[in-house]
Length: 363
Ligand SMILES: O=C(O)C(=O)C[C@@H](O)[C@H](O)[C@H](O)COP(=O)(O)O
Image (cartoon, rainbow, N blue to C red; front, side, top):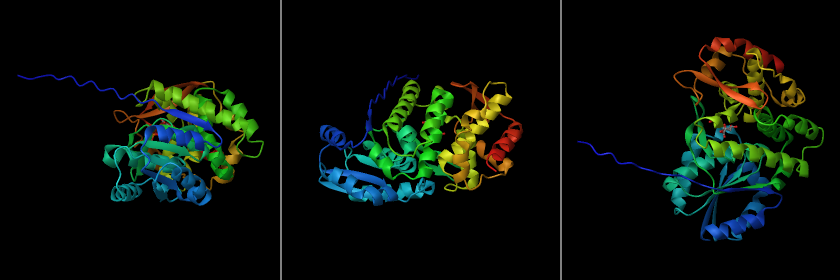
């Protein structure tokens, strides 16, 4: 005889994303509404700490009595189990309770790593994001994907962990390097490809001017955050449509892995990956052309040192993608602009020409 017990669990979590310049007041009133004023853990990118230490410290000390600040070395190599362990050890030794918030201040690396740390400590402490790069604002701080890389592949260890709020303060972009603006732009171009092709024209205009925070950039950032939010709301755990946000990423993650984490910025790899995905979509008959990326190609070419050229290794790396199903790589391609779909691809030798074309664009 057996018993069936039905377990109904709903994990609904709403949160707000604030986009603007100088969000100190909003941050403080949010914290005062939610958390006791005793402790906060701040996980901050080392470079952001150098540039904005006073701003973040003063802000946190205005409400919290005790601030534990932990820095994360700059760069993709920090998205590692070693850094995860170091942070977890330091937080547990410091002593936190389930309601002690963890504030992640930095780009995608810091946010992904800190988000995973927040999901692990005491099985979860509140997570707040304060993204400081364009990429983190338009993409990685939204939607709850957190984690670290593994020697076998990108982002292979992690958890979905939604933040309790995201504070996108464009003042941080004042110190963002040119190369980081370009890197972040790749994820915005992705929204152009999968949702709203008008974005291509808007960005092409914006890159003609000096890259600095402005009203126009705030609009593009808000629009991107809204697109991402809409998709994540529909499919939070990537059972279907959320995979479209991976446009260019299966190729891109392979490039990052084969190049060695840290050699190629995530956005640079994604940009190359989108050229590959667009070219393959066209080969399969879609009316798309990578001419949309033409205005941006020189910017990426200028900052990418070299792309890995071993096509065999790139194809092998694609097999560790998280979307692989029944041993088959699932590529996000385009039927036309703004109309993505999933194309299973088992015979990766078909991608040889795609890789050759893509690599030739960067020589
Ligand atoms: O949020 C998502 O979903 C995305 O796929 C956004 C990507 O731009 C982002 O790089 C993400 O971290 C990649 O996730 P992964 O599941 O392919 O590791």
